[in-house]
Length: 196
View 1 (cartoon, rainbow, N blue to C red):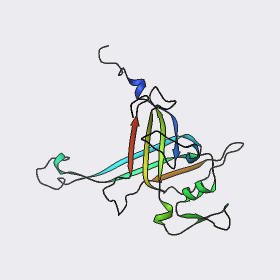
View 2: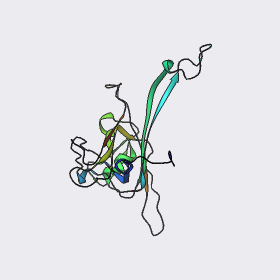
View 3: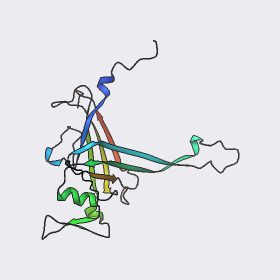
View 4: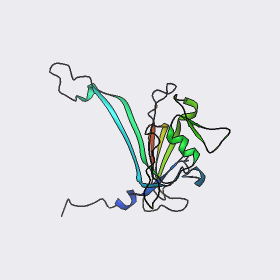
C-alpha cells in the first residue's frame, strides 16, 4: 500500500492523557506548579476556538462566494469546557462567574448581578502531555492559554447515587478594550527533548 501510511514521527506528535487546568503555567520552561492546578476533572477537557468570518463579496454582483481577498475575520469564540469532580470555594467562585468569597465567612460564595472586570476575569491554562518524551525536565507539552476567561456556563452540580458529584464548567475567553487586537487564546506545542 503506497499511500495508506502514517507519518513516521506520529508517536512524537500525539497529545496524551486528559491534561490539567491551571491558573498559571510557564511555557518557556515547561514549569507547572502543582498548587496552581485548579481541580480534578472527569471525561476530559474540551477546547474550541472558532473564528467568525464575514464575506464582503457576498452582495457584490458577479463576485464568487468566498473570494479570499474579500474575506474578513471579525472575531473568535473561545470556549474551554469539561467537568470538575473536586470543589473548593475558589473554584466555586470561579464557576459562578460574577461572585465573591464572603470576607467574614471564607466558606461562602456570594453571587453578584454585575460583572467586575478586575475580579471575574482571569487567564486559565490547559496543559497536556505531548510526544514520546513526556516525563522529566525535557517533557513535551501542549499548552493553551485562555485569556480573560470568565465562566459563562454557570454553576452546575450533578450528583450520582453512591458516586461523585460532577461540576460541569464552561469558560469563555474575552477580548479587552485595552488590547482589542489580542485574540483571547494562545497555543504552545513543545516536543519532548526539544531544545529550549
